Image 1 (cartoon, rainbow, N blue to C red):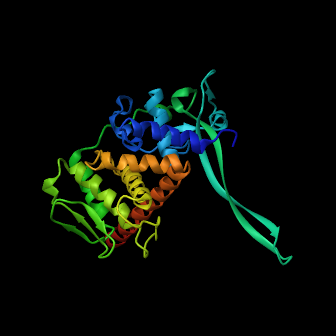
Image 2 (image 1 turned 90 degrees about the vertical axis):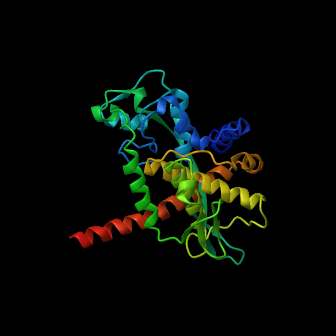
Image 3 (image 1 turned 90 degrees about the horizontal axis):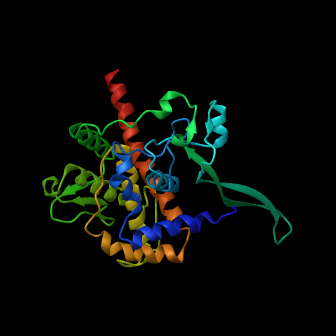
Length: 301
């Protein structure tokens, strides 16, 4: 890539953290994003994933875009539209691997898989003229709170995770493989409860019999701990966007910020890795809900 996209994105997130702001929670407090917060969408309506969510959320906030839709210059032309003169695109990334055949030490040919990342530019539909009318539709208003909570309840119940209630702490215990939550009534709002549960269930996905995620954590507060907390933070933010829940900063965020800053300053790829792990965790949890939904349809039929 001509520009170091790893460094550019990481520097932006470091800047936010140094000001006490969490990049992944900023969309919900941005005036121009009033309404239902959703993941950024491609020209075909499919949502972006991983680090691209954070990159395009940030771009939309900075430019004041209301629409979640983004597309390339070429895609706009194919739809009979055009990017307005002088408009600048925003970078997104595409990760993949290539297989290269090399000669091994004993003279035999060996295949080596090499990961690579490619950056390209996309434009918000508010930078484009002539698109079909549905691209310019305003976001739907926030759905009724009762419906939102019911939807979240069904989503998390589908995981069949061992969720226990009691005490005043929320945490995931790897030893007993259970999520501990304070009673529902202890939270400031239903949204705060479900956002916290999303965080802890993202931790729940790290178990060896699920996604087997391990960052070499040895003790509370070390680098491995900080990386896992970052994954849980992003996973919860992604799930909140999917479920139309407004997340709230936890009381422990201030304590984590310094450890996250240390990790990001030492490894410019750390945020990309965390976002990828978080996306896998969110997708994993969505899988349970998809199965439950299909089963319910089958019974109804």
